[in-house]
Length: 329
Image 1: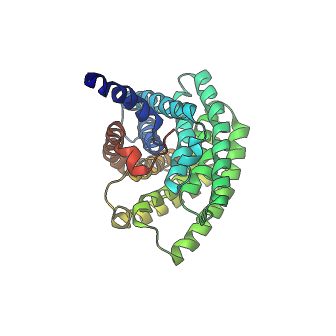
Image 2: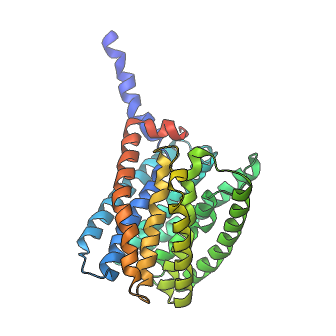
Image 3: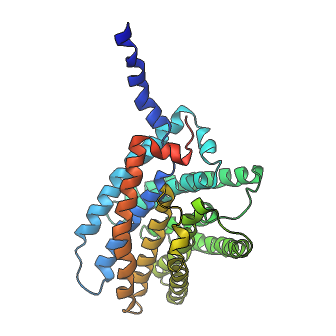
């Protein structure tokens, strides 16, 4: 009889692992895609020859991991769909759930030049999902005390649609991309304005400070999308703004990282990658910016693998779910 006692625990362990897949995985997945897309841009715009094979390897790994991580989270939601709402109860949780659909947009952008059919399918699956999660986020914020206090995570929900344009433009959905660009610029202006007002009156809690790096992503993405759409002046404008935001963040590194490493460091990875791609895109107008783009590229080439590996190890050991308070299905 005693020999049979451990068997239920062994059977339950894998089930519990899948049922507590944390949404905190997805910002790091965005960073890994961003790293690959930055190296893809470097192979096209860098001031010296770079092989595209390096970006292909990174993006191949990112696609495989993305399929595994998304399927894990879908397995969790299949047990209890309402668990998504539990995950979205906190600001980092809402950011993580929003990043799920954004990472699928990046999956579509990765495959757009390789398999337009798969890329289009991923794009139009992720768009309604992001609409739904944004609606959920808004409802939860309305029902939560202090839920309407603006945070950088709002960019992921309300401005994150701009990531879809990285796939939409290469796939030929120009009208969709233009509409998303206009709406997300308007949304971001409101978020930036309120964020500046709040930051002048109160301090960001120490554990949440890495999320301030998200402010770099919208302006960088606007520059990239404007470049894809052929809007030269707007590309220059938003790229210049992204350089300014990056300078502010760089001068605040100690402030942002004061709490030490946490899964929220995933918030550093994609915005820096987006900055690199934006500068490479701008180099089509001013060649010197290709040299400047190498600086964030080298930074994320070191930072992103470190963060992704740490987060995946934490997930495998169960520490990520415990540390981020991921809900259990």
